[in-house]
Length: 432
Image (cartoon, rainbow, N blue to C red; front, top):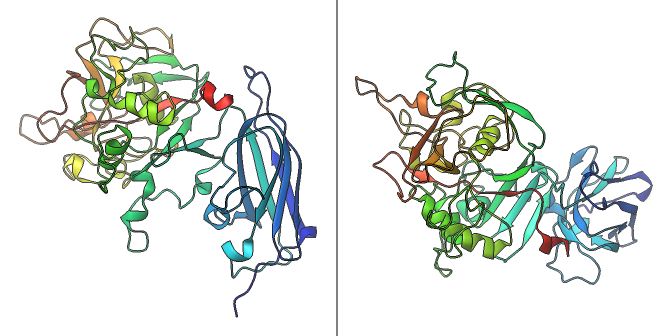
């Protein structure tokens, strides 16, 4: 006989959490009057008041452990369609009431005296949650999560028989982005003279970035690039989770004569890859700046490979052809970003030039070398005089090189790929 879930309202512990106030925000949203109650037919009712329009996330835990987002995905407001999940996205100010049927979504579980906790958080548009997911299948369908553990289905690293490729949406039709805590942090960019394999163009200097930003946890796969960069036939199924490895800088942004960073800022050609992506999502997607890329790559570390060995974090010429492996199959860095080392070279916005020696704030690079754009993180498979690969040179956090922005790729195994980013201060259309 199947057990139903029994919830005791007297043992329920309810919390409403609000992140730290953003000084630049006109009003900080708050969750008020949060309550949880259970009806006789075991339906759980969750109600609260939201003071301002905001992003709202929620989680359900028992005895301090999340029951998993997949176990309450039909949570809905009483008058909403059955397939509408109201949490983890933008919500209007006012009163809200949700219904959850645990006996149907979380069957076979029984707890009588354990802690039952519902956490509802309100996040301002200038200080959004750590994780954002953009869905290709529905225009402007953007969801947010307070922790990686809350993401439905989890972040999958390797295909298994239990979790086949067809369910691997985060490398196929959705993109997970991680917010990088960068605002006001002073850190050292480049490499010290003591670093093995360092090069002369890696002059160490201090950088302070002024804003947080979102960055994709994986480089774009072929499947994602087909969908988000509008090169897809919508009737065709794309299942390539290997990284896009033949993407030019100009194909992503537009001709450098008209869409030249930093001269033209973040302007992109409407029919470019990022142009299509912006039109589809409503977000200002672009490459990272070189400083943003290295800061995200290092994730608070100062050594070559984030406190790990090269083989632990990257595919390179000594272990495999760079573009033949799925994304996300090596260890991530401390911020959950995969393949920042090896696999493919990733374009960044900057023109190639010398680093300054003095401290800088939010650098945009030089503006005198538009035909040489910087590539970071990949493996160019340099060889020594004996013909042996020296991948350890080019997969380090500080390594940089450049290429003609019109080129899609050089001779293998030197692929050019894409890692997307967008501001963590969300656009005006979301706020209205």
